Image (cartoon, rainbow, N blue to C red; front, side, top):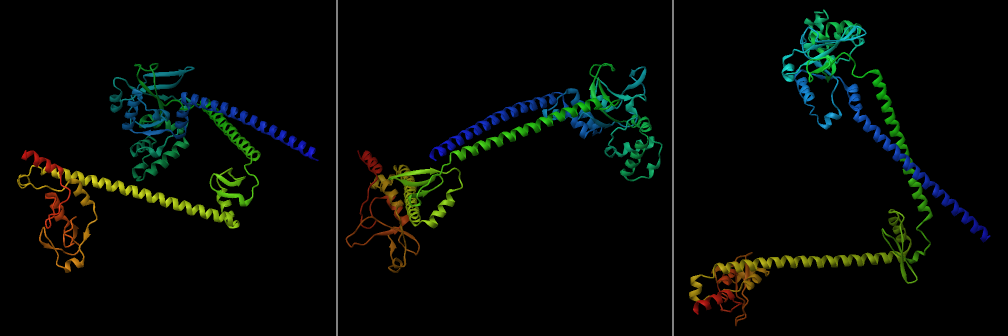
Amino acid sequence: MPDKTIKSSSIKQLFQRINYQRHRHQLSNRYDSFKYLFMMLITTILIAIVLKCHTIVYNYLFGPFLMNIEQFQEYLKLYKTRNYSWTYSLFREDLIQIELGENQLENRNYQEQYYFNKLISSYKMVKQIKIKSTLYPNNLYVRLPAKHNFYFNKKITYKFHKFSIKTLRCIVKNLNSYEYQSWLEKSDYIKFINEKYLNNSFEFNELVITKCGIYIGYLYSSSSYTYYADDIVLNSSEPYLTEVLFYLILFGCSIILWLLLISLFYLCSYLFTLQIIKLQRYVDQSPFCLIKINSVTWINTDGIYYKHNESTRLIRWPGQSYHQWLHQKLIETNLNYKQTYEEQVRLGREEYERELEIHSREQHRIIEDKRYQTYLHEEEEYQRQVIFDFERIIYQTTSASPRFIAQFRMKQHHIVQQTITDDEEKCMICLEDFKLEQIYSVWPCLNKQKKEHIYHYECMLNALRSKNTCPLCRGSVEPSSTTSTLRDLLLF
């Protein structure tokens, strides 16, 4: 029986290793597949950007973009200088719809283009003054479709609702309708024009486009059919996106979408396989073992501490969400653990309060030391200012030392109580009675009657700065070395 158990255990471990290796192999293959597909996706996107497919799609979906004369002037300046920002280059407005106004093209054809002896397009110069001044010495030509051009009969995607009321009136007038004179709303013009355009686009294109100056097209620079190399042509004789180019772009977008979906599939497969491998490791390397509940001494975020042969061991958690639950269960079920835990919490709280008190004392000491140094500096500076006082030198008066005065200012002074006012005590420096809530100080001397000599705080501070003796009993305190040294030098 033991032999069969050992044999079955070995076979199980063998299958586990094989399964683990298989998942590792799948992980490597899916990572490589994702890497190659993602590289192909990035390469395809870069090629599409270089070929400006994104600009073509943007103009095809959202164009044409309406421009009036002023906007078209700025557009021509930008087109002529080619000074595009990178954001504008990514989504450039190529397919435009402009309003040049009535009869803004010259009548004669500057150039004509034939196909199998049939006129398909002609070039007419724009005579609009603002446009000519913008492009001077160059010119703007409009390439118009001829009657034999299929584009002449095609319904162009005009956005009539964006035209000005002046242009709409011109369109209606050239369609031989004078009903517009009684119309008040712009919607009446748009409704009438749309009906006419849907019924007979050939007649509309023949009567309206050139006379009212409404054009849809894109700009290009060409010297083949114009006089100067930098002349600009507005091409309105052919569609912005041909059918062949449309299907090519559609095919390219399908490839990009396919690569994106396949890349996401392999990425998800890679992440899923990685989680399976982590789960297998977790199952194979379980951190738990059987221990007696009475041996548990502490539970925290690191794991379970327990006693084993006079030593403390740690079982670490496999995650971060088990310790609170187990800690609460042990408090409810095990009295020994509860007492140990409460004792450790108490000791920890006492240690924290002790450290907090030490820290508070240290902070108080630092603050008091800074305060003392400030007072000492103030008194030294004061004595340096009065060191050459003539009366002090003549009467040989010595003030208290800066150190003594600074210590005096640091002491906790007294507040006048009712007992002092009842005894009708006076400050013998200013000769005024003590009043309730005033601050007073005691001179550090002891007379024969064992009675303290008390003065107002400010009075005593000024007295110490003047002399180092009590005004009543002449009891002295620590003298200032600066005043004594100066007097000795002068007497010498």
